[in-house]
Length: 140
Image 1 (cartoon, rainbow, N blue to C red):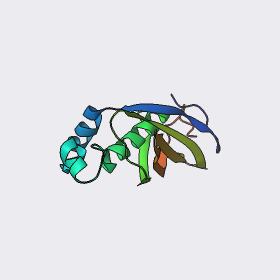
Image 2 (cartoon, rainbow, N blue to C red; image 1 turned 90 degrees about the vertical axis):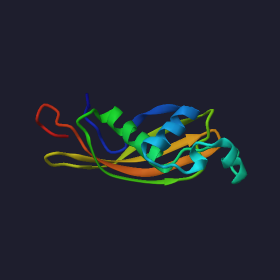
Image 3 (tube, rainbow, N blue to C red; image 1 turned 90 degrees about the horizontal axis):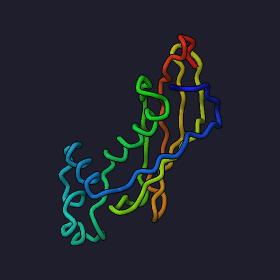
């Protein structure tokens, strides 16, 4: 369950193994049938060394990172991300976050700055605004 949080607090990192299955399943689940997300041969023909994760899967993993930390009753209000280097199978993405803003009220909200790095660099940057779960009915 959520503990008290302050601006500047860092969320524990989350390491996500980037399996071929995760990349393909994420593309299928988000109805993104672009061949670069599931067909290694066609991805190579288009200049990529392998298939790579789509932005919708990355977005979902960022959301998971936030709700894993704040709990299942936390509500994502805004997720704004930008992709950098691709996520290829066989690597690991390490998500990190830091609380940059807290808004008091009922319910309280937090803004978290997110980064996700893999073996070749920064895959994702962004911010997530999340409504915090009530803690004993007192909000933040």
